[in-house]
Length: 367
Length: 197
Image (tube, rainbow over all chains, first blue to last red; front, side, top):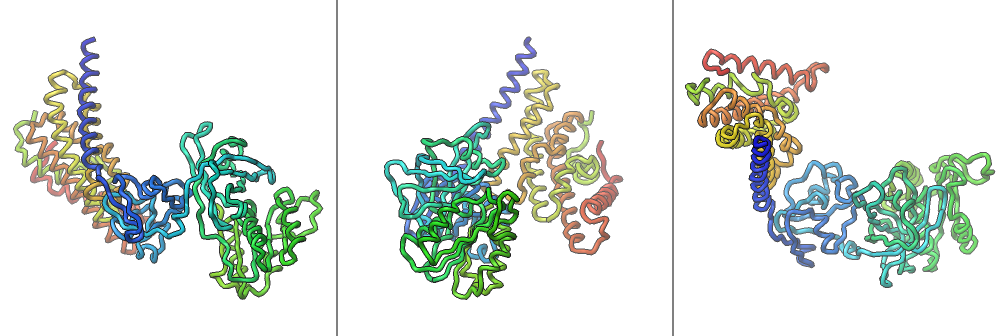
């Protein structure tokens, strides 16, 4: 009995002493005190507790840097120019930064730990990004794996965004998933509808956020989101636009087309939508309706593998082939592409071959 | 058993002829995986040396003044490992603060020092061989320096071989093992001068 007691007590005693030592070391060594973040040469100054990441410190001060992976250095979106005080470049950041970016001091803000005063540069439009608490007011089934959600903001808050931009949704822990996840989805509604946003979400098998949105979120639920993010938005300086999307990539294109219509801009537009078979098409009636109202707009759905029962008479084959057929002479035209990285890369090549200027090709890769 | 050995003989022997990694084959895993680059290898060598000295001293005191008087010899593995884990934790915190670049380069291998068998090996040899305080201290220091010397030498050689043409079949671990074997032979060449067992 005595032996058991002595054993337990001595192990506990030794562990306690060591634990206390570690706590003291942690308090002393991991305490970087208060650090100042100087944003855009004194435009804004934040005083934060050192020791945490730049991304989270900025977020807790209501400055939201885009990040689709939630600070795990896997999406490469949270780039911020750090002019001073960031410390050495980490191996985790290297794959996402080009040589030029490295020279300019661009860093992934989720990997920069604040240890001393920092000077950073944040583009003006990121200050527009805010946090919104919304209520789901409508869920529509678009296809067998795509749903559209409407989120109305609490307390009548309104949002200012450009057609084509995206929002980031934060999931709550559900079922066996304990951690929160943040994922980006493009807005499919128009900027003038500024008390709410609509997002089109395709189910990704095993996806953390899409499973949550498809299976767990019901009408009336509260969802936290931040935004608007992204530089995939309408530039008005052309008269001829080519839109091209696959799957849920239709969302920002719908927003862009509706925006152009609302503003009564006199633009020539063609929208090529790629899908596998007829069951993957959606918003067809909507775009047909737009076609009727606006003689400058043309809608071309293209199926890569139509089922025999689809009785499909429209365009068939690879989306790049269809694009080649409809796009001739790209000089002065603008192209907006949205879909999987593979599709976009292939389409960009087709467009460049058709004499599109590379800087007039805008895209948003969904991966 | 061997309290009469001069601590300095233990010191030199543990650097060369009784080198932890080249004669006892302890601490092989980080020895091979972190020896690509001289600077990083040397950094890890310093960290291991520091942990070795640190833990040998603490383990000596804990063993002599707590474990032995209470008759808890059968708990020595547990005690040694907790002490080692805590020391590594503190060193990691310190390194993150004062040597952030090295901290990033060492990555996972710094926390892995916790289970570096060379480090537990020192504490166990110290007990088995009945070393007194000075002998233990110099044994820890010598073994650390020996490990540092071995990994730095290996890394320097590997940096050279990395730039030279070598037969395809030997690229990577193959050549590394051959180099280690030759290094062990060279270190053992001193065995006429001093050796401890």
